[in-house]
Image 1 (cartoon, rainbow, N blue to C red):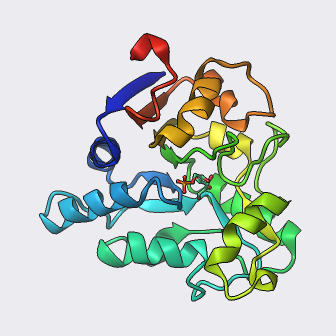
Image 2 (image 1 turned 90 degrees about the vertical axis):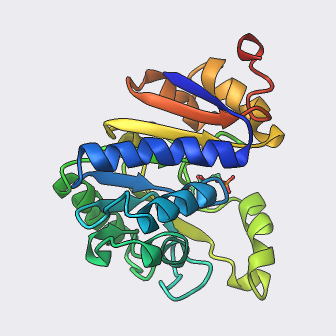
Length: 245
Ligand code: F6R
């Protein structure tokens, strides 16, 4: 495991974008596993900037996102498909037909998940998986207690997630109750994993993820067993790691 120390969010984003750029340059038809949330927004912005300068070509890249709310259409501005379109895909020359997000409109959960596992398998496997880290150690929507051996599945959102998300919706009733997420097994099968972490509020959980016991109670702790993990974290997020301070 390699840990890069970044000064702040912007520096973290630049370092992470460098790693993703290197992947695209080394293998133009690579498969990128992508994430939503606040952590990767700056990384995507940096990639767009380099694309606009002519330094990056996404035309042969395939992307496979971690997760999507069940019940939300791609046009819904809270859907993860909408997030990816507006934060990255609409601004680079990626072929949208080669960008995958679980189908939030598929009501049959088993079909949605089987289809998604099939997409991952037939893509040839994920070359580089980008991850953000939840405050409770979640990755994707794999919350504490999630089984390490699961592939894409449907999860019931916890009350605290519904509560946290309701500010984005007109009413609490509109907040999705379920989501489709890649499982830990899919994530662990990626050839390389890049985790980006920013902010003092993530410092305690990052310390647990890196140095605590490997347990489903801290889903990201399983990353200790992957043989090619890079962490890019800012100083605030690394503040509980004494040996690096
Ligand atoms: C996003 C995802 C989540 C986030 C995590 C961190 O697709 O699957 O696991 O990566 O919740 O979110 P932020 O980056 O908003 O702190």
